[in-house]
Length: 573
Image (cartoon, rainbow, N blue to C red; front, side):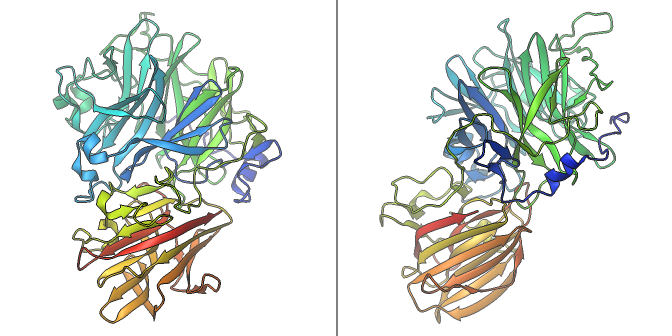
């Protein structure tokens, strides 16, 4: 642990204080030639960005959600639209049935921190599925796919599965050599560099049996490129002006607070004291930064202690402006949202934000000029009338859905959700119920989600409605439950249940309103005009490494029968 980096929590200037005291509804493109962080106040954690000419593409972790690895597009780094995903069928393409609705065994696990590159006229995504999962490579000639997903192989041709690795990033070097950087969570959680085959699909110095061992630091697989790093993840590696730059997170202080850090060298394995270049298995040291250490801290936390620790450094088409697109780590009710900070290159080192207090480390910046002026405002989440033959890519299923239990075509203009029995669960059925579908919660001064749901197709034992839920530990829902006595309004918060009035109509409107403190109140209506609050308030929570989601569910504890038709989902923030 670095003991000489003790100035990270210095007193903040008024500029930094403004970052913590902002009006949460004033974010993103302000429409006046400026933008305000956070640009994406929703859980787009572990982002990586690729620029192709004037187009930017962003991918993000999706854990157990389906489809896997969301893809977004922007022309200005602030306004984003969802355009697709990398992994369509998680159990099949990943060769891992834990993502299936029949198993549902990957809460707080799954797809972690992918990297996006373009090489040899192909898009490449490298990613892992943490917790005894695999290291994968996905390729496509177009960013929207179709994508071919493959398990990578070790030097003996064995598939890299059954591992606890995360956050891989490739580098194709000028001399024709290729590399893959990754981390092994645990007691030796620091960046490890592998040699990569010409086709980008095989590690030339990694063995699956050794990589699966717990004491990775002693078994000689790959090269421990920076063994001083502690709890290092979020790896990115790139080359600029003759230097190799390795970006990752590193923990500091007694609270193990993560910081975005950089190391660099003119040799990818560092340099020894005698000036000779490092080599595989025998790395040298990295350059001493202007901060006096070999680890260069890019940006301070904000005044609330919120950290900017994982993301991607990207330039504009001119190569003159640089940015750090980063999530705000730590985890809140909207997960790990995205901010965009300017980057200045100082003596060959990238400083994110502005150095207001002149300590050589950047501080966050709240309001900035738009990278590109005059673009169209957009956001990757939003309302849906379900009028299209295909589901919009903004939606996420909780695990791989059962394809015969939902439809957009059986009743045009509606999303039909059939009910089937959840998997056994002593806690509650919600997190073991298949075909729950939702979107990320977008934090703002006031957030409203409303659905119109037709319930004439419900059967005894069925429950359906609107829910807030995180990554597997907390949820609260408002819905309709049907039994032999009729249909009734129901509020549930984890194991707490409130039953309400009988519902005799075939149509119900359900609404969630969340204030700027993350406190939700549910409402119902039988005419779509007059909404009545029902159930206690619920405070949105972070859990399973995910922020809150808002969506629809339908399951039946007794039989595989019944359905509801969702006419529309309206999302205001």
